[in-house]
Length: 190
Image (cartoon, rainbow, N blue to C red; front, top):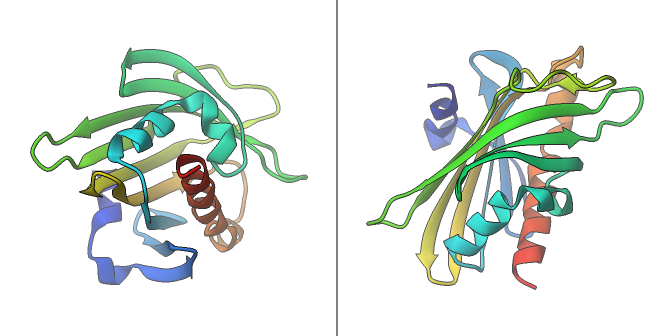
């Protein structure tokens, strides 16, 4: 139920950035002081290429904003994995870490692929010096426009943990998805 909140009425979203083909929106979160995020763009590759990059978690440090490390823990199937990730935070804030269950389901008729990435904070012991993210729910929707273009919608509902003020997190949160999408596009369209 929590991750479906992010796809309610489009008019509820407030456009915060629209640059280089990437749009980033926010809206208030009914269950948290941390805003919901949505980013979308078209990428000039097929859905399968996007899936391969997203599920190659060891490459997340190349394109996911502030990713320090991303390590597979368990491969359930090709598009159902659990991995550990760490995100950089500037001093005096501690880096965040999380354990994510990443799973994709593709509709064989429409070709639309829905990916969920849900944190499982208790799957591994806490790591000294890092703040475990207590809740992270993101969703990707990959819609093929044609064989060489995919429309991507990404939503995120996160509580970064620790004692960060919500206003500061909300203020800084737009850059992450924007820069991640730019890097993803650059990698995929080389």
